[in-house]
Image (cartoon, helix red, strand yellow):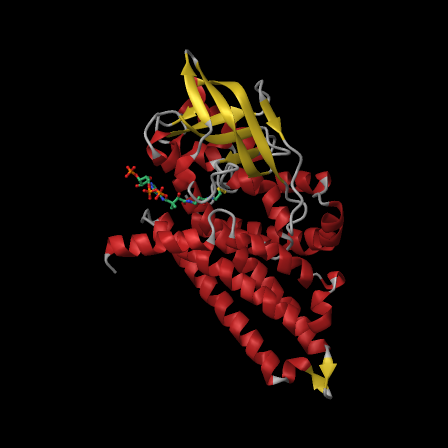
Amino acid sequence: MALDSDTFDALIAAVRRFVAERLRPLEAQVEADDAVPDAVIAEMRDLGLFGLSIDPDYGGLGLTMGEEVRVAIELGRTTPAFRSAFGTNVGIGSQGLVIAGSAEQKAAWLPRIASGEIITSFALTEPDVGSDSGSVTTRAVRDGDVYRLTGTKRYITNADRADLFTVMARTGEEKGGRGVSAFLVPRDLPGVTVGAPEKKMGQKGAKVADVVFDDVPVPAANRLGADGDGFRIAMQVLDRGRLHIAAVCVGVAERLIADAVAYATSRRQFGKAIAEHQLIQAMIADSKTEALAARALVLDTAVKKDAGEDVILESAAAKYYASEMVGRVADRAVQILGGAGYIADYGVERLYRDVRLFRIYEGTSQIQQLIIARETLKRGE
Ligand code: COS
């Protein structure tokens, strides 16, 4: 159920203030330290950010998708690592449980996820399994009241801090997604090991790492949904996650446009502000047009999702368009800033590296194209 408009407006205003006054001044520090300060995480908890998407019955804010994407756009206006700090709890780390969890599973975990007391991660990708996620090789073998879980998951966001993993593992002999089940795996079970965080191109402060499961005894009660439901659950989680990421891309694009405009209006060449040169204006116009188009697509898709429509195609289209769009916008922002765009102090260089990931995680652009084409062919229009 939607929040009343005053409450939602107050939330947006609080998030906007938090981003502008608290997070943006810390961007260079997060980049240098490759970490989001604990004090900021505590403030995110107080704002309710960890529970944006979780039902109020479990202590969350229970935002609709239409509301969540508007919050995500606001959060996009700063370094993406801040959003990632609670992003898994809002999205891929919690939504398997929200979509397919039993009442007992939800009661056991969701309140602590919503409050940010525990951190969640989504463990689908493996060393040899990326885009073809139906072919996961991690195995969960039933042994009485437990499944014995063995395998390695790769590039797992927030694994370094995670208390609870949603793990997709093969339980049946069927090929492809049909043999895959999903499990809630607490980190403190014996046999769970988290590797060292990877060195990444950008999005410093948001960590990814391997997670190794070595004969981990996962209670059978921790399976999400029925045996063999795991792939479908993971796909539903990603449909939703992709729309959220698309919204973040819109926010980053809006930030980059603002940075480019601020620079172009103050920087003078040939006797006038470079913003008065038409070739600069052309870049600003292209970026603005594309950002508006992406914003409209994101908001429209969220409305459809809230209305209960199937948005597999639209979520993929939003992620595809918005992530590619923000790549172009970042590239133009560097160009408008010229030499300054290539220098770390100005921040645009950092965002240019940060946005590169949006075209890859939660499904590459090529996977989005594949989904969009399949769904269009299925729909016949
Ligand atoms: N919602 C619900 N069910 C879905 C679904 C969705 N979005 N997508 C697929 N399914 C179901 C299908 O209906 C099908 O069901 P049946 O077995 O009953 O027929 C089953 O899942 C298998 O679907 P499909 O045949 O489309 O699977 P493919 O192996 O062809 O894979 C893609 C589909 C490529 C779309 C999927 O593997 C994918 O999204 N890959 C990218 C993964 C990714 O984003 N990784 C990022 C890292 S995780 S942060």
